Length: 531
Image (tube, rainbow, N blue to C red; front, side):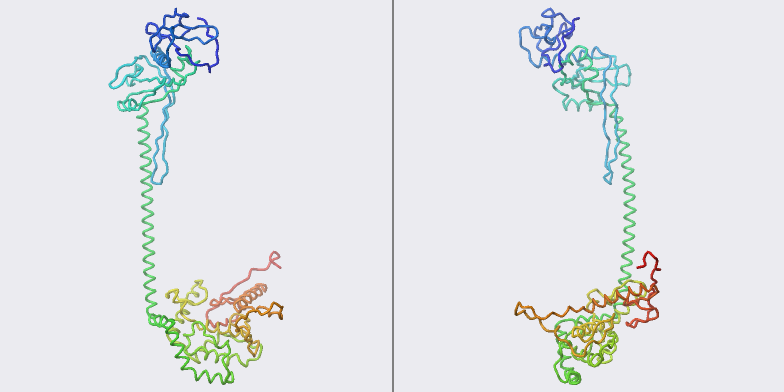
């Protein structure tokens, strides 16, 4: 048999690669050339001649012309079936599928079933056997009684349709599709075409009953894994929900217990709180201030005559401080009396503890009883909490009062602190440490109380006085400096548990508390931390 001339595989495919004679298809190499081949077209049935020249690839051509793609497709399709009928072994494709499900936590549980490609030997092959509802191209069988027949469909132009595939799956048949739609010119040669049909051409499972049964087992396994995992998740959620409900129940019980205790402790102060709200009303406050002004006018005139020689009240004595309702006297009267008795006439350099003015204020004028009881309750609860180790910051507050009530209750210490600030603004006293002031002048400087005036010219005036340090800022700075000095000494020192003022061991705080101070021991000095 003469060899065909070699051509590049990209050469245009043949119109009719195989000729039919006596019901058998032959390649050009297997027949005589020209009309001596005695072949007809497998597609249209017209006479073919075999062209076996030296310059072109061997092929068949219609003797009287004509022919189309249908002739090529029919020839390839029939030759593929002829190869399968004559063969005894075919390559089965890979079957792969993933069984996957999400659990309640949206985690994917999956398992892969893969049956690799393999060679399958068959002993019988039948062409286009009628089966109920369809006629497959080829039916292959072996001698094993448990093996179902394998239906083979050859694709040249048309793939297996959805209806045929559904029918195959419904009846449990095994079917593969061999795809010859992309064969190149070399693949339709004699031996190359046989290898393509039996082994090398792409092929796919339409349905594999054995693989489907195995996959059902894998799917059931994954479903069981997900069911077990979901049971664990539900059990864990149930446990967490029970723990949460138990915790919430305990918190609710604790809140109810605390609320009952709070109402119990708060009950004796309800009348005083009502009085606090009434006295804080702007209308009631205005009426109360007018009543005190009328009642205390003679006493104010008498004090003016004694300390001011009948003159008008200076601005630092004419303020209406916040919380003035606490004192049972007009603010002008008690401010004038405190200044006249405790500051006026004191030599420069005299140290004054303003916290001690509170008892003087109570003895001279007395306090409003409901407001004083509320303040005492605040102070007692605050100190009790501090003594038990709770870190409560100043100002005083009571846990059984609302926040707005704690802010509304006036403090005598705040009244005195605000009055001391006015004296400082008048350049009469200067803060030295927490609650301690020093007399620095006998005549008040009222410049701080004058309203700001617009500048009348751009010419530079006399140098301005340096900005004076506010008492709060000075107290903070002095506390810091005192702590540094005590740390430098390297000896134990004390800190008041009420106002947190550092003290030398053995000293008592000016706040007058009887609680034992907290002892602080500085770290030992080493070469590393030695300045």
